[in-house]
Image (cartoon, rainbow, N blue to C red):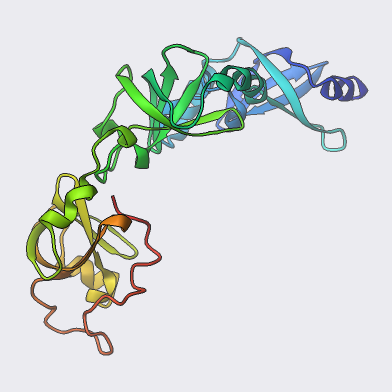
Length: 285
């Protein structure tokens, strides 16, 4: 263990051979001691991106690394519990920080979609293949999407805007380079107007209503008294008529009411959406 401590104190990369894998990560060996590399500590190249939370797919992806030699750093050790934790990401981050010095927030970069996960898409920089940024699902498009694959697929060439650089990680945006449909929403939608929309999906606050391909409104659960009653009266994928209660372009929010009130509103509810009714809901865009 003293040899391991000395290696950690040097804070230098060391090469290890991958001996085994499980759903949590990889098993290696350092100075004759068993070591663990959590999946979250793998480099962008080695982390199985398209597992979508599937345990079997994750294990299959990690097992492909058995026999490979990785460059890692020791990030945690405990002789009493025989715990030795390694990180490949620490080595990658140190290398990438230098490459990122020539980039800044606001820059537009070209790249290729290198992976797609449920939470977003990964982009490998065309000019610096060692750098891989992430476009969060909320930054892919102005419209509400259920999967990043509605917008991009692996191999697509894209241009994206850098929106954040922190600790060797780059956050990118596609929608920042697209015209914002909310800029002209007040010209198309106004309070009091009756509109038709399709129920996109439900959440604890109510239902998202697709008014057009780029604009989504919210009808609050308080219109119905409970989420169960809401789902009884509205069906995902079906179209209904609504009355616009308010339009707030800067907040990217349109609040809706049903064009016809529920037949038996619960006692104590008047079917209106109070000012604080949707304040805890994230912006809908």
